[in-house]
Image (cartoon, rainbow, N blue to C red; front, side, top):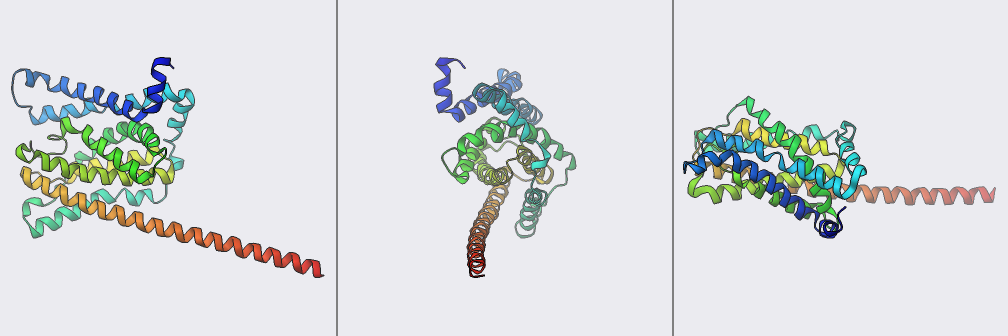
Length: 296
């Protein structure tokens, strides 16, 4: 490692990762949009969609490069091992259904109570939009950034911090990724609703990764989340309506995530209490057995 770089990189690995990721991703997105920008024309929807594949290169390249720089071959082998299907949790399959189920419920209820325009779409090809996003992005976000953020703090705080960084990384394509149209004056409201949902999703991914130590779990949940948004998003809502349903989805997702975390905490506390009680009972039984042997 270069001496002049080793100290700051070791002290602030996530800051270096995020800066390098944004540099690669945003430069790629800018190059795609450059022809329209140079002609002083608005960026068309199709061009905006093409910006996202260019952005996908940032997280994996940064994660792999910094892993090799900081941890060498051992770090790269550990990163590759985290992709093993053997680390998948059996309940992962159920949790993968959470994003499409919540989105479908939100849109169906809003279509009944507010306006039929919120009715969920069924653009099945949209699932394939989630594949490259999940497979590539999580190499950096979960494979590199999350473990470093977890050092010295809770996974909940680490996940929220990563969720906010992840949301801001989307800024160049926020008007195009999964959006019906550019949001104009509703752009701040849409971004806040988007960040609300994505940060909750990052907390859920963080919990799954902490339980399984599996990068593959994070990739699958990311695919489920992004794919579901593209498949089910209503195609004719206005900018304000899109910001609204994203906000409702974000709030509901937070409720589910926090309720699940609370239940998991109570289950773990009960399990620890039960294990402690079992150990104490075993010690008493062993003591009694030894006493009985001495009497005989």
